[in-house]
Image 1 (cartoon, rainbow, N blue to C red):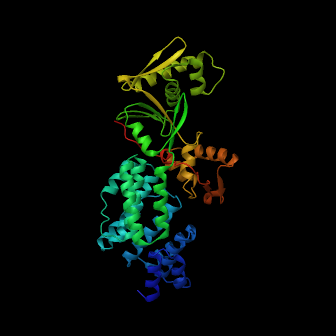
Image 2: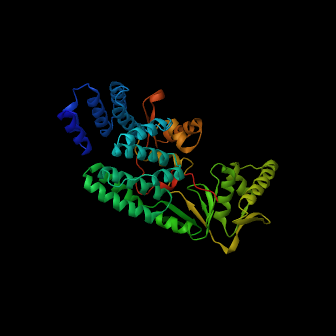
Length: 406
C-alpha cells in the first residue's frame, strides 16, 4: 500500500472524507477508486459512491478476493444508506465469511452490523436480536464498537427495553468519544434524546397524556388491556394480539376500548369500522359477523357483550383498559415515521419495510405529497421520497416491528 492510499485510509477512519479526497481524487487505480467511493458515501453522495465502488470491485478482479470483499461491504453500507432493502443479503454474508477467513476482523464485523441494521429497518426484530447476539465486537476499533452499541440500543428501544437501551447508549458514547468521529457522537446524542421525547399518547375521557418510552413500557407491563394504536394490536400482560392486517377488527377493538367502561352504539361502530354514515341492514349483519370474529380472538383477554344499544368490552381478571395513541394522527403515521429519519426512500423499499403493496404505498405518498408533508426527488426508477424531520417526539413505536405472538 503506497503512502497516499494509507493516508487517505487514515483520514476516512477519522471521519475526514475531504482529507481523503485530497490524496486520491485524481487517481483511477482500484484502491483509490474504493477510497473515493467511501469518501463520497461519507459526504452523502451515494449514487456516485456506489458507482466508484462498483468500478473498484471490477478493477480488483477475482484474484484479489479480500479487496473485492471490502468493496462489497462498502457497497452494502451505501445501499443501506440509500434504503435499497430489496437485494439478497447473500453477497454480504459471503463477503463477511471471506473477511473472517482472511483475518480482517474489523471489516467482517462491519458487514455483520450492516446485516443487523437492515433487519432492523425491515422490522424483523427477532432475527436482528439473534444476529446481534452472535457478534463479538470486543477489541474492535472504537468506531465499530460505538456502532455495535448503537445497533443494540436501537434494538432495545424498538423492543421497549429502555434500561438496556440506556446502558448501551452509555457504552456507545464512550466508544464514540474514543473514536473522535463527530458524526458518531451526534448519532449517539440523537438516540439518547429519543428516550426523553414523547413517544405516544394515553387517551382517556379526561384527555390525552403524553408518554415517554419508559412510561409506555410500564403501561404495557402493568397488566392492563392496552389497545395499541401505534402498533395496531391488543396487549394484556404477556399476551399480544396483532391486528395490523385486520383493520376492521382493530377499528372495532379501538372503539370499544375508547368507550370503556361504557358501551358503543352499533351505528358508531359501523361508521368507525366500515366508514359509512348511512348504514343499512347489510352493514348491521356484517357488524355481527365481525364482532363474532373479534370476540373469538380476544377470548383470552376479554369478553365482548351485547347491550341494548351496542356492545361493551369487559376485560378478564378485573383489568383496566387503556388506549395508546400515536404521536402523529392519520393512517400514514408509520410511513411518515420511516421517512422522518432523513434518508431518501424508494417506493419499493417503503413497501418492503411496511409489508405492504407498492400500489398502497404509492397512493399514500400521493396523498401526503398533496398535503405538502412529503416531497419526491428524481424521476422514474430513480425517484426517492423525503419528509422533514418530525421534531418534538420520537417515532420509535410507529416503526415496523414483527412482535411475537404467544
